[in-house]
Amino acid sequence: MKQQLFISAVGVYQPKVLSQLASSVHDYGATIVDCRMGLLGNETSITMLVSGSWDAIAKLEGMYSKLEKKLEMKVFMKRTEKRLPEKQRVPYSIEIVSIAKSDLINKVIEFLQKNEINVCEFYTNTYQNPYTDVTLLSINIIVSIPSGTSISLMRAEFLEFCDRLNLDAVMEPMKVF
Image (cartoon, rainbow, N blue to C red; front, side, top):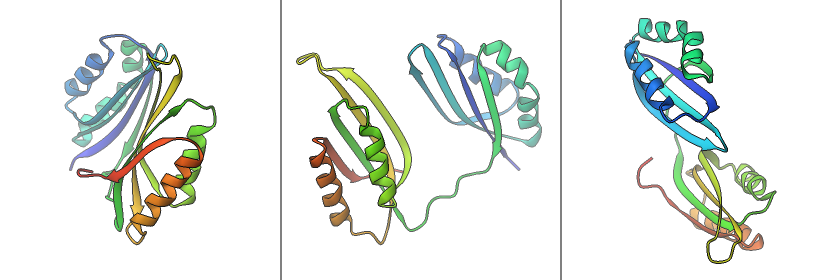
């Protein structure tokens, strides 16, 4: 029976670190099921879900400290199980662009939580607008909404919320989840 292991590695960015981690997973007989890497400042964060036989996963867990030294990163590992899909929920994609404000992300998260909208993925990015030299904030979210919710009312309430905060936003159904 296949086992699953969640791996998270954080440290100073090095161009070969993803390759080294992927190679280590393969060398111990496991397979990468899902992987995400991001750069935040000079740091990089890699999260992976790996799958393999119980002994392949045990070998990876046993090489934890060697992996930290090899990658020169802090590594966290935790066994996990296959995630079951949320029943009775509908997946949606939300995109928001706005002038960067310090409390904006918190307000968006509070709105979602208040309306029982589960966050599945959440990405943000700030950047300088090349035409106006204003710092903009881009937020991309994948959510799941209770299937009994009136989508038209939810969308209207969400867009009203965005209008009050002067946010440009789109909320649309996910075609692939």
